[in-house]
Image (tube, rainbow, N blue to C red):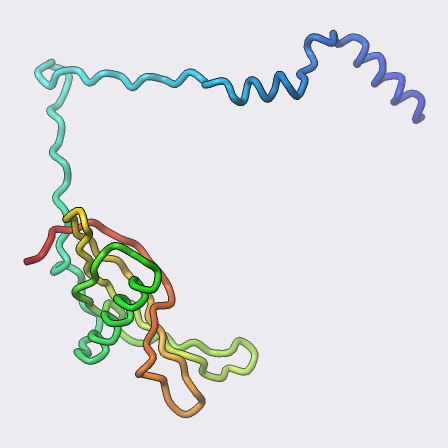
Length: 171
């Protein structure tokens, strides 16, 4: 049976001309050769009867429109400070100046096996001003570890990074 399979392979290989078998050099040259790109179609003037005028770019959102989940002035200050410290430690260029808690309550983290409380996390949107003058806000998860008796409120830290949206700059 093995001889039959090998014979069939040899017959197919012999029937294929050597020029059709790609070599590594041919594959490499093809990969390095710039592939033609499709040119974008030129936009027709809006005055043509079949064309609708282009819509203006959507307005940027406002940080003021971010919905507050819970109100806690002290925690709000802690998450802003944690975002600023994290950004400084990572060498980020934006300057965080405001924060809004977007979670309605803490998310409690537990050990999967024992169920023991490990930490709690809250999400906040943090407003940033960038060196080039544009502004944005981004959602982050902030965590406080649990030591078995109480949460470490003095050690609120940025643990997770969420979506970022450009927004109008605030005065």
